[in-house]
Length: 557
Ligand code: NAD
Image (tube, rainbow, N blue to C red; front, side, top):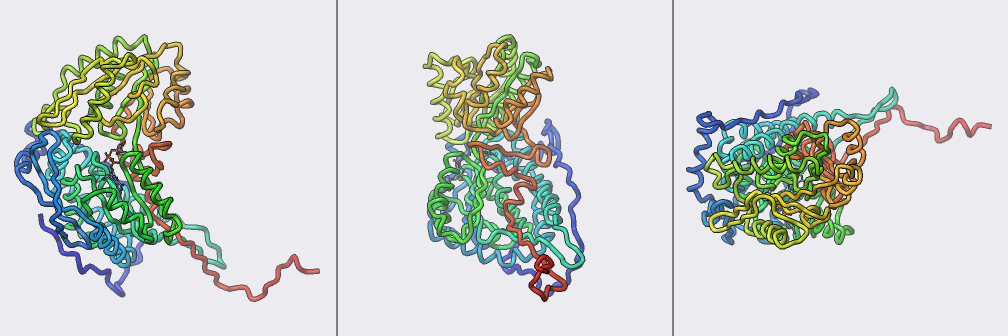
């Protein structure tokens, strides 16, 4: 891949500005390609097999320069874990400090670059992903994160591209938001970036999120140090390279593979930390938040903490729902990408009158699902991300097998000889607070609680109170009163609430994504809400004819 040298980038001094007020048109979502046998996109993706033979050497990237420490780690394919696909250089404390310095240095020019020029680089990254690098990024995501072609397409291609395009559109809206003025004064708001650097800490499961957690702050004039997830390094490194090719100036994003606690430790101790843009587990986010709390008196500003974290996402069926629609939502919602979506359905409440039929249909559907390597396009389910995840899933399955409060209805087999394969598993919980009804597992396991049809309202209350999370949830019903009651009882149970649809698959610009309670700060990635967090507005009042007397009329005798 060709890397453009942008090291000497500087905004032109005394540059002629055209003073145009610029606004990006409302974008359309990037169309999702289908990958039918023989289609051009499918043929292009056949390169997957070729790419898997490469072992990519991934450097650290600081200030636009590749840095090699020689302290190496390996990235393996989750579905074939003896196969190394990348080797990466790990950062030490020194490199993290260098990256913070590079981010602070780059910020001076970057924040003074006209926003349309920043946006133009973002749009170009999006377009490179949509065209020249679509197959390559999808292949990297398939091989490195074990996604089938369709899951890779909706993540590393479409959602990533949508983030770039929609953020530009919303940034224009935000910047045009200005206060009132009057004949004697001119008021305006200047949307400065935050003062300092941003740390973006990104998860394994979405390439789009990894990209977006850096590029949203960058669009608003900030610079970042990026802690990518080790298990997503291959696709994340491609994103970094494509951003550089698109002209992202040196030091705007600094790419730091390595140990999270080491990188976090150095960043949290730096007085210039201006914000953390995080997606990952609740425990990690809470750890970072605590670290900020401990250091709060040492920072120049109060760091903005934006985090999207875990979920215990539900499907709730009322007796008026269509059983087949409920079953389909369970299978797609719980097992696509092996349940490793923050929004994945991981508990379901089914009325007794419907359970037999739902169970039958889910069973029939599961009997047709194949699991295996991503290069076999007939596999719906692939591997979970790593051994820790495999062991965690197996632990829940083994305990369910042994428990008097649970029963394995479908699946339950696990095998890690070649890859980390966990069969799509349905657990039936006999008590509503059984551990897998309440705790996030992050694997292809859904737990079902069958409730008495007459206890609809109290089961809704149970759903609301069983887990600490509030990310996504779905209600299935055709009865209007039942829908209204669910709407009211589950008001705070999900930040993304679906009526007669699975709780996964939020689309940028259509279902702004994020949840509250233990699930995060709900700053809705890919929208105005999120952009606002990366700006530090300065209100400017200019008076045309300043006062010359200090008194007021009320003082008169
Ligand atoms: P994780 O918390 O294990 O890791 C996230 C990132 O944090 C990784 O890059 C990791 O290396 C880094 N990290 C870990 N400890 C750190 C520390 N002390 N300092 C700095 N960085 C540190 O999460 P994961 O396994 O990558 O992702 C899965 C989790 O992410 C699930 O809980 C899922 O629900 C959540 N998630 C949430 C959303 C959402 O929008 N709510 C989206 C995707 C994933």
